[in-house]
Each structure stands twice: as C-alpha cells, then as structure tokens.
Amino acid sequence: MSDKYDVIVIGAGPGGYVAAIKAAQLGLKTACVEYWTSAEGKQVLGGTCLNVGCIPSKALLEVSHKYEEASEHFAEQGIEAQGVEINIAKMMERKSGIVNQLTGGIAQLFKANGVTSIHGRGRLLANRQVEVTDGDGKVTVYEAENVIIATGSTPVEIPPAPLKEGFIVDSEGALEFDEVPKRLGVIGAGVIGLELGSVWARLGSEVTILEAQDTFLPAVDQQVAKDALKQFKKQGLNINLKARVTGTSVKRNLVYVNYEDTKGEQELKVDKLIVAVGRRPNTDNLLEADTGVNLDERGFIFVDENCQTNAPGVWAVGDVVRGPMLAHKASEEGVMVAERIAGHKPQVNYDCIPSVIYTAPEVAWVGKSEEQLKSEGEAYKVGTFPFAANGRAMAANAASGLVKIIADEKTDRILGFHVSGPQASEIVAQGVIAMEFGSTAEDLALTCFAHPTLSESVHEAALGVNGGAIHIANRRKKK
Ligand SMILES: Cc1cc2nc3c(=O)[nH]c(=O)nc-3n(C[C@H](O)[C@H](O)[C@H](O)COP(=O)(O)OP(=O)(O)OC[C@H]3O[C@@H](n4cnc5c(N)ncnc54)[C@H](O)[C@@H]3O)c2cc1C
Image (cartoon, rainbow, N blue to C red; front, side, top):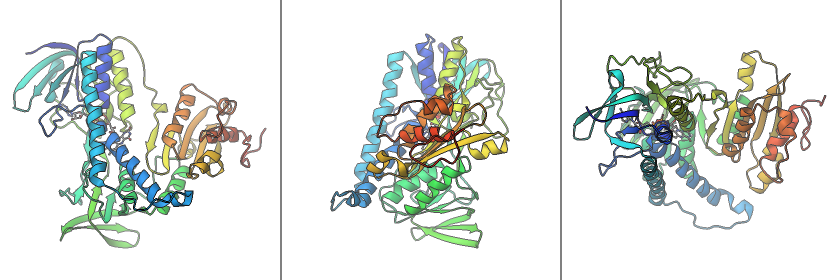
C-alpha cells in the first residue's frame, strides 16, 4: 500500500486534469493517474481533447480554411496569389507543435498546483483504492478519500468497416494522413465526420460522406441545419443521407465501400475511409467487481446530476458519463466535483452547454431547437437574422448563415440560440451568457452592440423576436 490521497483522479483529459487542478487549489492532496504514453515512453497529459481531438482537429481546420481561402477566394477579393500550395508535412508538424506545447503546459500546471502525476493504468478497487499498473507491469495500490473517474471515450468500430492501417481509419488516423487522398469516404455525418471531411475537402479531396440517418444533424435546429447543409454541398461535400454501410474491402490500394441507400445497393471507391460513427465510454477493465459503481444501460458510468456514482466517495465526469461528449462539459463537471468534495455545492447548468461544429459555416447552438419545443408543446416565438444582411460579414466575404433566437411566447425568456455562419463558435457565447443570466429577448434587444460586427446579427435576431428588427422585414408584427 502506498500514499493516501484526499483525491485520486483516473484520466488526465479535460475532465480529469481540470478536476485535479481544482481539487489541489482547494487544498486537497491530489494525484492524477494517466496511462497515455509518448513514442519516447513519457507520460502524456491532456487526453483525447489535446492529443487527438479538439486541438489537433482545429489546427488542421484553421490551416485548411486558410488554404482554401487563398486558393479559391482571394481572387474575388482582389488578391492575386499564384502558386498557392499545401505542405502537408509542415501542416502536421505545426499541429504536433501546438499539441506538445499544450500537453506540456498541463504538466507544468500540475507541478505549479501540487498535483502528483502517476504514470500507469488505473483500476478502481473496493473502498476507494486505486490499483496502478505502470509500463513495466509493476503494480501499486493507492488509497483515497475520493476517486474521480475521468477515463473518457474511444471511437466506436463497426463490423462492416474494421480499421485497416493506412486505408480505413478512425478520427485519430484521419488527423495523420501524410498526403491529401484523391477520394475520401467518411462514414458518419456527425460533428467529427463533418469537421474531418471538411479539412481534407478543402485541401483537395473529393469527399463523400455516408450517413445512415435520414435527417441531417438531427440534434440541431433544422432551419439552421438545412442552411448549413446547403453551404456544405456548395463547397463540394457530397453528403448522402439514408446510406447504410454494409461492408468494406481493400483491394489494390483502394477501399471499396458497399452501402444501401434509397436506390438500392451501391459501391463507393475511395483512397481512404474515415469511420466517424460515434464514441464509447472507456470502462474496459476499469472496475473491480465489488466497487459498487454501476454502469447505465448504454455502458456509461451511472451518476446522478452531481456526478456521484452509486459508491460513496466515487465520482465520474466527462465522456465516461451521460450527456454530450464535449471537452467543456467534462471540465465543468470536473470543477463541480472537486468543489463538492471540498464541501461546496455548485451545480452544472446542463441547459446552458453550447455545442459547436467547426465547419464553414460554423454551426453553434445552446438551448432548445424549434423541433424540441414543438415536441414538448411549448409556445415560443422566433427571431432570425441572416448574415447576408450584415455589413461586417459581407466585408469578411463570409455573408452566409443566420442567427436564430427562440424565446418563450409569454415570458420572453430565451430558450434557444442557434447560429450558422462566420465565427458562430464565438457568437454562441453571447447566447450562453444571456441564458445563464435568464435574459429575455428584450434584454438583448435593449443592449448596444458595436458596429460593424457579426454580433449585430444577434441584436437584430433579438429585436426580431418581438417584431422590432430594423435591417430586415419582420416575420412578426410588433405588439
Ligand atoms: C476529432 C475530435 C474532435 C473533437 N473536437 C471537439 C471540440 O471541438 N470541442 C469539444 O468540446 N469536444 C471535442 N471533442 C470531444 C472531446 O475531445 C471529448 O469530449 C473530451 O476529450 C472528453 O474529455 P474527458 O476528460 O472526459 O476524456 P478524454 O479526453 O478522453 O480523457 C480521458 C483520459 O483518460 C485516460 N485513461 C483512460 N482509461 C484510463 C485508465 N484506466 N487509467 C489511466 N488513464 C486512463 C486516457 O488515456 C485519456 O487521457 C472532439 C473529439 C474528437 C475525437
């Protein structure tokens, strides 16, 4: 038996590392167990988000966006740029540099806050003991007053498309291509499939996305989703809905994808295939039989609204528990749990967690869609404003998409805030703040927004909720 801690966190992704830092800041003796190992055999912190998720994907999205701008859209703005070329090796080197800088930063934050970093695979035993097996197979058991499980998730594999190195890859492999595939297939038109498909389409791949569902982005407000779909199609992303993959094979350096759609059986021939059909919680070999921690019917660790498991003193946060698989949701939960262990009583406001798809246009939302409100029988009113009527968006050559605000018919409180368009990921924060503070559409309408800004579209949409938009004809008459 080794040292006893107030808190041991298993997993150093955005759920785990944030929980560990916060716990240490609150004066708790804290350790964090992480098994991610670099090629040099060193421990790597930061989890999926920093290593193979949010950050590297955004590094590639930024570069590919700039490349596409330079090669396709500079001329229409009066910039003559000849011989624009993409250097994939350089782009990947930059991406790795950013990842290394950020993951190294977490190690420094652990040191600065007094978090003990333990390198190895953690496993929860009964009575809040954590068994850690290091790279050499040495086993150490640690004791803690509280354990936070933050082991995250991994990509789901599907039987018709088993991974095959260099040909059929998951999201991790799709961040590592060493050349632009001429033809690229993507299974899954979710957030990850759309983002990674966009990266390679912008760099010149002919991209076909196969999606089994019949609705595009069913979780997104459908007015916004349809607007985004139109833009994606214009950019050359070939998105096939109701297309169910039935098998794959690799022959003579090509991937053959068999699928069924409304027209019957089809075959797609591509150079590479990305499988992006979702992620599953990491719970394999994590829990000894007598820990008292239960899983829910979908295999996630069962927790209450405060991320407490069935076992006293054992908590779980992030992708390994219910709710959206998002880094900021994981971090919010990590902070809440650390605070609760320290005796405070904060709660995560699950109604105010934004979601973003970092495509062009970006798609971002918080709160409820029209479809949700309709199905719940809620009376609501809507204000929308298109970026086509926003001067700043026109100046930026990005005048597509819209802002849509949905408010309660009677109280005027904002229930949903949806954006597709330039910098939607930044604009959505205005909706989050407004909803967090219980704002009405009128509150936003009475707020002064700088001119000319993309955010003026938020102002106009808020004005439009009650029929008062200035720069567009109002759908609703002002009462
Ligand atoms: C391509 C891609 C793009 C994404 N983009 C975004 C985005 O833009 N925005 C966003 O919010 N989210 C994004 N996500 C999702 C985001 O990465 C996850 O929601 C987030 O990382 C979850 O954090 P977590 O701490 O729960 O788990 P993870 O980040 O998965 O971290 C879990 C950690 O636990 C470790 N671990 C697991 N089991 C053990 C064990 N037994 N012992 C020790 N260590 C263990 C793992 O090695 C890992 O480091 C993206 C994901 C992908 C794949």
